[in-house]
Image (cartoon, rainbow, N blue to C red; front, side, top):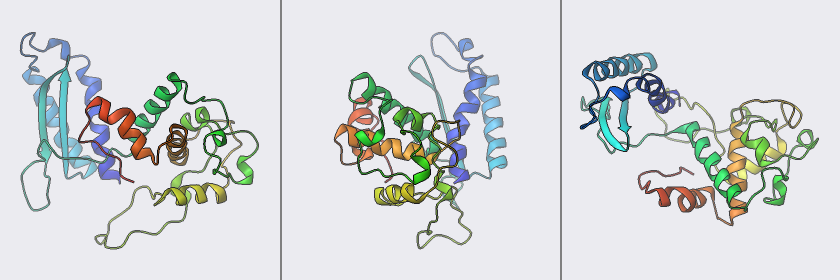
Length: 240
């Protein structure tokens, strides 16, 4: 959803500015200059209005030390309290960073080869005839050069019980079976490896292939074992 997507983008917008001012933080306390915190507060208010977002949570770390943490907007409709520290947000396509990191780790460990056909790791993947002009590899999936159509081009059914007017930003496959069956019947938008085009489908498939290559039951299990648990990210989880 667009509202949730904005939460993931907000820290990136601030990082560009803070890169130039963080060295001016107090050497002992790492406190940010008042002019910086005032700018952050002002920009957060602008983003809330621009994106029609209910809330934003922000934390800034300098040299491993938390120097700023604040919630803006509201956490619950009808309650003026800002989002508390433990608020969880959907990171949406930032998930691709986790998929890429897992791929890099497994490549470094010698468990996957980015340039072999993914069917060597997941033989149950069957592509549409238009996607069989060349082997699709993890490298092509991760660099968005596979030519696979995006998830939003698939037919889908909204879940029951959504509020009136609720808009799903990116329709998603509801299961691994939906993903694999969708790939089989979805034509490629261009020949394999010809060029770049953003593909959520390709990233979802890469996640599935990595889990298969690692012998995991799901990408959720692979992510927890390989990355989240070792890094102590106990409040991060994958929504299947």
